[in-house]
Length: 221
Image (cartoon, rainbow, N blue to C red; front, side):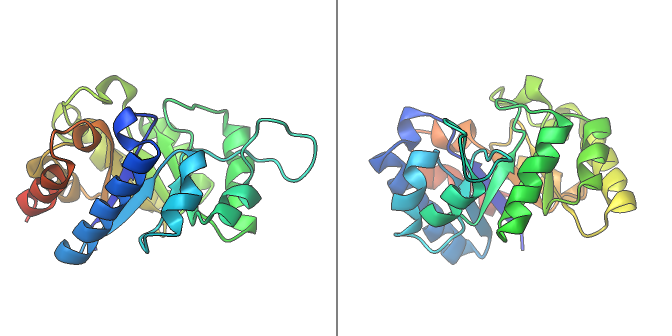
């Protein structure tokens, strides 16, 4: 099943009540078009959304720390208690060091939370795959929010990342991110070997978010 992960970031259109509305749209799309939708709202919105929708809700970030004196950190225990089923790790807008990635991943794994490590090139993808998260999402940062899909601008980074991951950790899935907006972008990502996409602004900033998601999934058929 095609996987579509929608990162809500901190856009006005995906904060608070708008975040819940968008999550409900994603749930409708998952049901109507037989795709796996995952939403990643801001931490403060996880609880409200997870109570209202059945699709997986992920955090946008998690720190590799546990209980104790860690003011301002986001713990795996806290996002799980709020209803999250997993987390993004190392998004290009929340970049962390490799050792911190490992700690964040370990914290998720200890509590049965899924993980998506974001990477920006084949070398980073290879290093992330060695940690064996559930997914690696390849996103060249220069294309994020550009409207230019990585599957067209730099298809080799996707296909080479898929090849690298499968050689190191065959069970780790690969997602394609950056600039994904239209159905043809999703189709290209799948054709290059990815199992789905990680996207954000192309849907969230659309005038009609539901229509944008419908166009994405139907255009990929």
